Length: 375
Length: 231
Image 1 (cartoon, rainbow over the protein chains, first blue to last red):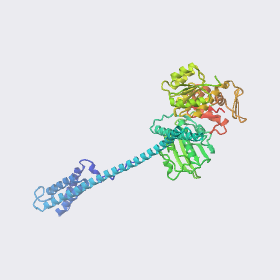
Image 2 (cartoon, chains in turn brown, red):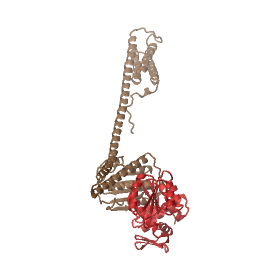
Image 3 (tube, each protein chain N blue to C red):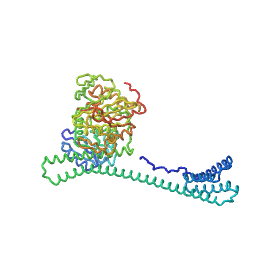
Image 4 (cartoon, each protein chain N blue to C red):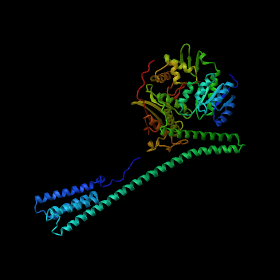
């Protein structure tokens, strides 16, 4: 989750406790030092301008650190100004009462600016909290929307076959005189819906197992030529009428992987070809050595992916818009991605320049290559 | 063996599954015996020896593997095991313990019947061990002369390749596990030599198959072993 922080508080130093008071002391010390220096260099330097130095110090402290440090700076400034510069010097006695106005103004400026700063800071903090809150609410709303969309998609996919099965069975039970031809059609319907349900449930179980990390990899040295061969055999009926072009070089390295999971991965990819590419259109499967692993590509001559779909197709319950036949549950490629991930491989979907879709995956050969085989 | 009406023993604890298997098996003209537990199956089969056993590996009372071993102590009847998806290790263990074939649940009735018929055919046919040669489609293997032809064309195999092919051809249609084949052809091997089988099978496919990545004869049972197509 992208943790987005709100606008930062404008005055970062305030975070250190006591920093404001320390800076107030320092600011007054700097004002006193510069005042002393100026009166020494320039003996006619006016007291009103000296007061300005303390006023500046107080204002800066107030702007930076808010009310309390600014009161300290103002009081300290007044005391130093009075003690050091106001005649009679080196006493707190004040001869001219108009200096009380100077003291009053310095204190008032410190209070006003400090209060404003405090208020500003409180507002910034409030808006930061509000922003974070509204962001959290937005994310939660999106998650909730997604969850309910997933739930309604799954429950629809589960309920529809179930209602067909139970409805048809009820009809058959209540009407013993149904003509045999209709009985056959109805039984075929029950069979087809049960098959769909079986596939959906096993896909749901598989993705749950894969994503929860409950899958124990049965790693062996696996030949991708054998994976391709056994997958094609299991899809023999579904692929009938399609030319399957195979490119599997003899020197393909073995991969240290779970062969059953790789077969499931390839099965899902080819099942998508059957589902999305026109009946009778050809399909090509190739395997090549690529770096420290093997790259397998499944190319079809179907409609390909719509723009932006290349990433989304791997998301749970996402279904292509261009399905030719009955749409699946939107879990096939999610399972593929999970299988590739636990093998530390890669998978990608793209459109081929010449048209049609390509889904390719790369599986690392494994850490230690097997020793040479001798006759 | 009763060739006319072979006796099939089904060991399955779920009554709902037995309920739909029963009429399907009886319609094939087989005699049927049912057992709900491993213990009951062992008792029933010693009373009346079955010609074929269908065994669900997920029994409540006994490990399916244990049932397979106990049955194999005295009967040669083919054992067909049923197991859940993703449990290849269970299948391999059952096959290594003497089971003849396996099916993954949920089982399709037509496929189960086909497997039962194939297993019974293998049982009543002459033991392939005694045959001097085997022909499957265009593949001909002469065990005596070690001569192998594919569609009348001679395939020149190395001694290891011939041993692998002969081993599979002695049991056409049967799954042989990786470990079984490794043991039979190489004897005891080190763990890091287990890939020998994959490499030699790949070479063999190149000499026997028209399209090695889509084999017609040398079939891969992923995660389990190899099988030579029966016909």
